Structures are given as C-alpha cells and as structure tokens.
Length: 331
Image (cartoon, rainbow, N blue to C red; front, side):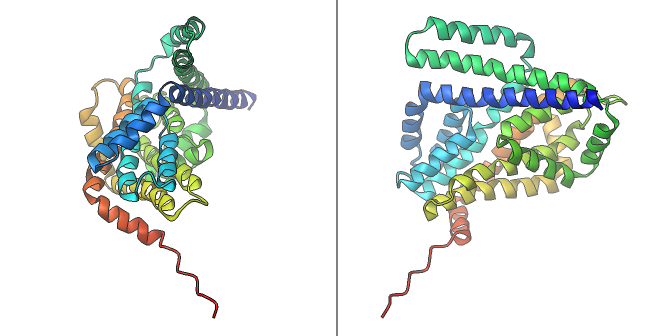
C-alpha cells in the first residue's frame, strides 16, 4: 500500500513538472515571438486555407493550442476577426498542437540533462530579453522530458499492480470507458498535451503477459477523449464574451466532438491506418510514435472534412448560439 502511494505521488510529481515545463515553454516562446505570431495570424487569416496554416504554424511555435485558441477568441471579441475567418484558424490550432506529441515520441529522456544545461547556459550567456526567452524555452523543453522520465519511473511499479492492470484491461476492452478516461484526464489537468504524454508513457509500459499495457486499440479511445476534453478551455474563455466569441468556441467543440464520434465508430479501421503509416517494430518501441501519428491523423482528417464545410459550421454554431431576441420596448 505504501509503495503504491509512493508511485502515485511520483506520477503526480512528474506530471506537475511536465505541466510547469509546458507553461514555461509557452510563455517563453510567446515572449520571444509572440507579437510576430499575432501579426502573422492577423495577416494570414484572410482565407480558409491560409487561416488553417496560420493557426497550425502559430500553435506549433507557441506550443499551446489553448493559448492560441483563446487569442483567436480575443480577436473575434475585439472585432479583428470575423467568425468565418476564425473557424479555419481554430481548425489549424488543432493540427499545430499535435507537434508536441510528435516531439515527445522521440523519447529524448536520455539527453534531457544536456538540454537543461544548454537552456541554462543560454539564459546566462544572452543579454537580450528575447534571447534569454529562447534559453528559458530550451530549459523548459528539457523539463518536459524530465517530467516524462519521472512519470515513466513511477509507472514501472504501478504497472505490476493488479488493480491498475485490471483497470487498464477494462479500458482496453471498452472503448467508451477509454473515451471517458481521456475526457476526465484532460478536464482535470486542462492540458491535452500532458494527458497524451501520460498516455504515451502508460502505453509504452510492458504488461505482465508481454506487449503494451494498453495496446494501440486500447489507447486510441483515450486519445479521442483527450481531444474532446481540450475544448473546455475555449468554452470557459468565451463565458461573458460576445455571441461570435461563444460561436467560435462552439466550433472548436463541434470539430472535436464530431471527429471523436466518427473515429470511435471506425476504431478498427483507424487503428489499422495508424499502424500502416507508423514505423514497424516491437510494440513497446513504436507505440509512442503510433499515438503521435494517430493524434496528427485525427486532426488532419477532421480539418480536411470540415474546411470545405466552413459555411455549414458557421451556420451550425449560429444555430447553437442564436442571437438574443430584441428587448420589447415599454409603451
């Protein structure tokens, strides 16, 4: 019992370090390039395709889809972007956020000390504010892998726990339970990147009978649940804002909800496609990359489907968030 509690505390400690690293990375990159990214977003959001590219590029640089989505909502609220312009940018944000999972799949834990040292030296060696922000970003990037290493170490004894193994077996055989698990995890930590990092770590642990604890088919519903949970940040940010701001947040939710429902219904084909486009090899060595590719594939396909239907999305969210009826005048 005591050993189990130590493992849980160590897991949450690694998660806390990862979340701090994500926040520090996003803030540092915004300091280094934030104003340029905002101008890029404003310039390129003129057409649907350019809007997707702008959303993807800015999110990939700032490493936070939530921050960029909230930025877009702010532009809509200020009247700098129309709803029609904002919706494709939000689609692009979903693509850009998959870069984090792709980077984490490289498994750079063994060189995390070198990355941390490089970031620290840059902070000390550079005099300018933006240059020092780059150093802080490199240091924060190292913290991500320090957090992952801590979570992986904590998961080693937990993987042998009968209770943990039983829960994962249920998740593996009941996709709806995996979907709910991913949703609850992202709602709790408010970071889909963090929950996907945890998912990659869990899936890469060996089961007692060999192979992955979760397997690709078991992990994919959790991944889809993560994508649903990440929409809550935008919904919360839209509270008290204009109708179009609420509609933009609703578009983010509709995008992920409809995609998750479709991919859940086609789960065997989804798993097969991910396995086909991912590297081949022992399951434990390739599953982190498979999950990163699954995350990217989900958002690319959903964007390819929804982008030509942007006018339909706009009409749909306008129906979900209708205009207020005019107040009756007192006679």
